[in-house]
Length: 268
Image (cartoon, rainbow, N blue to C red; front, side, top):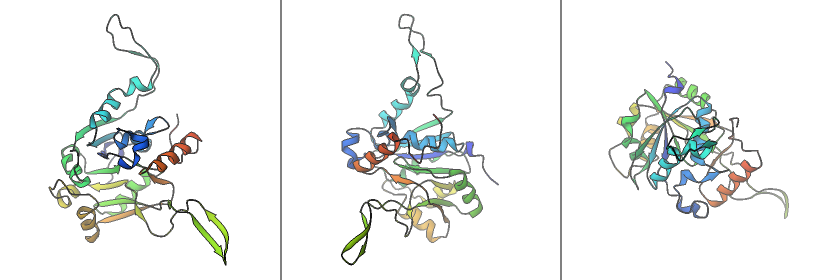
């Protein structure tokens, strides 16, 4: 029996430092690095929100106070308002900008904790039979509604979204010593890689994530789940990109600024 999407908590791993993004992030936690003036974390949350999700659990680590402050100030940062300083009243907001129907739980999961251990540390906030999970730095036009349906049909404990990332190297087709075709960033059609956008049954946490501060989700938990034939793949053929480097950040911002961001499935 399906779970109402609005009741499924979305865990977002937000502990990263973004060390390879220094030019863009300086001293920001990676999920706050912006695309078009909004943190990539916001873009990920908007993607889920458009599919009906509204409960978010943020696994915080590096510079967690900045992520908390961003959302505490969210309405002030995004809306027009009048402030009457003399009488100490609350701001008078003039529009609905920044009025998202989101319930966000902020959980301190440690500075250098492994991704699996972060999930274990927030387990008490997973108050539904299943939960979604993704990375705070990976974005795509994933059809999350179809992902949920796929997961339910599979009857397995976990589903991950498989993606074809772009190669970082130019691809050439050569005839003799002449280049006949050159693609700057071809999509790798062979094989799938883990693009996040997971769905798990709640029991995955107790059964597969040991109590170990260094435990990475991508090591023993997912490897064992796969060996047990309990991990399904939802094949996503569309756009997906991880924001790992300054070059990635520049490319994502170019897509946004040109109005061609494939992951923008919401209306302004």
